[in-house]
Each structure stands twice: as structure tokens, then as C-alpha cells.
Image (cartoon, rainbow, N blue to C red; front, side, top):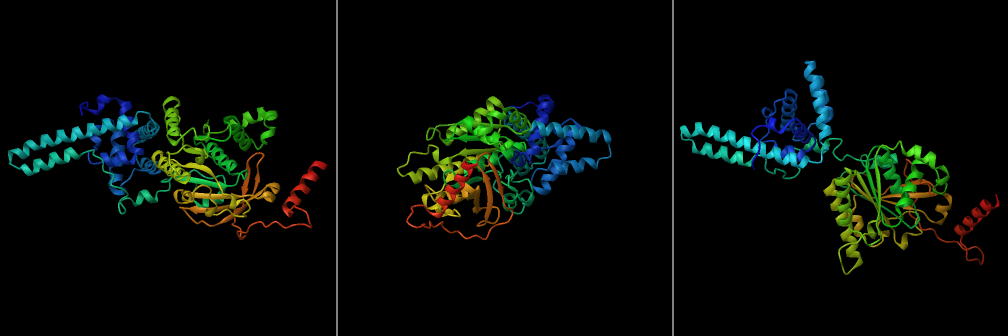
Length: 455
């Protein structure tokens, strides 16, 4: 591939983008490490950054963190260089989000490879004079390998810094502290997170609470809805942010608008008809957002995966399995979490705790998901505004734990206890009263409704 003969000819903006890629893209640094030299750069601050990256990678086999760089910059006595480095690092991290970063990486890789080949050919002249043909062959072979793909996987001994670095998962927190304690900080890169429950049980409110909490922290959220309309889902987000019940939002619009102005992240809500959209449709929409709106999601919510169109299969179970497997694949490809509610089957309708065998459609969902939580709410729970949250599966910590909560489905306010409950998973057994067809739960519901209407 033809390249310019010096990095300076590419311009300062290109060089800053190269630094941004080196500081944030470990795979790029891994591939280019054998051909990277600070002498390609003419700026002293840029040379210092590249030298430090090379040194750090040689020792820890990964990119240096921003915290590490900040500490090293503070150690420099030369105030002019220290200021120049601070500004260069700020520009480089900002440039790491550039839309043409892939082109920059490809072009810089070719440039480094050509520089290594040029150096090998010049050195070969001296080796030719002394007849060292094996040395010439080694030089040329090494130069030809410069910049090639080198990712062989997670190298256990070399990559210890990578796997113990705190930000490796880049976890987005749950709105509930106890869930963060159990999952090492929340939902991370490539996670498929499922929220099981019965119809009307609050699982859709739970994923909206997760999206709202993420947006409040500054993350970008895409919410795909295949049941509810875009506008109504938007109002549910309004209710969560404001605490105002959905049916009271219209009369409090001004207050809501003031509150949502404070939300740091962006939320995009996209509606598709059930079984009309597939994961390919969603992937194309994400690409459209990035190309046209420069919007890149940090977390995706799909309400819900079972309503997506899957591959044409004879058995419904096989189609569902394909959708969930492909959703996990998409999360891994995009390197962000995907969250989806999912239905429990009829046997879970009267359960105090919904377990894995209560998954509707296919039990294989449990095997595919990374973090799987259920919320159980029988008739009495719905009247009392309570629920039982159960960790069915957790790749990052303990599971099998159950937590009591209060749930207000008028505004999506969910408060979950910080300590697990010892309650057993028992079905609610109807108790007949005399010759009536009403059980005790029905009686309690009617009694509560009577007193509400009598006020």
C-alpha cells in the first residue's frame, strides 16, 4: 500500500487521531507494537507519549490508563513539556471518538510497515557486503510481518493487567446498589441481561428504570419497543425521571421538561411492530444513528426479544433460541450490554419467586444470558405495591438470592432491599371462604378497592 514518506505530511490532526487510537484501542496497539517508533513524530510531546505507550505495553501488554498517564505527567519537571503533554493528551482522547478512526488506523499501520521495510532494505546493504544472507532474510521477513494481526486471544500470563483493570468491563450501574454489589458494578461490555416476569409484573418498568439511570449518568441509551408506542415509552421515562405518575404528566409538562433538561446522556426510542423487525433491522438502525446523527449507544434495551423476527425455523423454540443467541452475539460485536424483559410461563403466575424453569418459550434463554433476574408479583403483591426479585443467574457473583421490594407502577419507582430475604419459593394457594368462589387474595383486593372508593 502506498503511503506518504513522512508522518508530518499527514498533518497534525491525523497524528492526534493516531495517538487517540494508540491510547484507547488495545488491539490496534497490539498489532502495531512491533513497528511503532516515536521518531515518526516530530512533536516532542507526541514523542514522549509514544515512548511511554511503548514502554508501558512492553511491561503490561495493554494500553496505559488515563490515571497512569496523569501521574507520569506530574513527575515531569519541565513545566512547558508538562503543559504540552496535558493538552496533547486531552486532544488525543477527544480524537479517539472520530468517525474516521478506522481509516487512520489502517493508514498508519501501512505507514509503519513501509518505514520498517525501508529500514530493513537500508540495513541489508551492509549485510550484503559481508555476505550475511540469512540476516537479510530475517530482516525482510520481520519487516513484512510488521503491523499484522496479532490477537491470538487472552494470553494468561501477559494479560494479567488487562483482566484486573477496574474499567475492563466498563460496567453501567443498576439503579439498585445491591445489584451492583452482586455484579461487580453493573452490566458490562457484551453482556446479555434478561429480566423475567409475568404480564403486568413490572419488568418493563425495571428496564426503563435501568435506561433512565444510565442516561442520568451520561450514557447513551437506545430503547427498542415492540409492544408499546414510542410516545408512551417516552412518557414512562418522564415518569421515572420526575416521579410524577404517567396519568398526571400532561398537567405537569413544564416541570417534566425542566427535569429532563438535566439528563446528561441521550435516549433514542424506536418502535417496531411485533415480528416485523429482526436483529439485522436493529443493527442497521444503530448504524444509521451513528452515520447520520453521530450517536453511539452505550446500552441497548429491547422490549422484548421474543417479539423479534428470527430465522425461519419449524419449531418456535428453535426460533427463540436463535434470536437470543444472535442478541448475545450482537452485544459482543458492539461491545455494549443488551437488556431485555422476558416472559415467565403460566406456572410462574402464582409463584412468590420465579425460577429458571418458569422461563416461557425456551429454557435455553437461561444458558445464553449473562445476568438473569426475575420479578414475581401475584395479585396481592400488585395491590400492595410489592415484589420479589430473584437472581436466577449471575456470571459475576452470587446468584440464587432473593430481595423484597416496593414497586410503584404509576411512575416506575422501584426500591429494592439491600439484604436478601429468607422466604422460601412457595406457591400462593387459594383458600376458599365458605361456599364463595373468592380466595383470600381476591377478598383483600376487593376490600382495599372498596375503601379507596369510599373515601
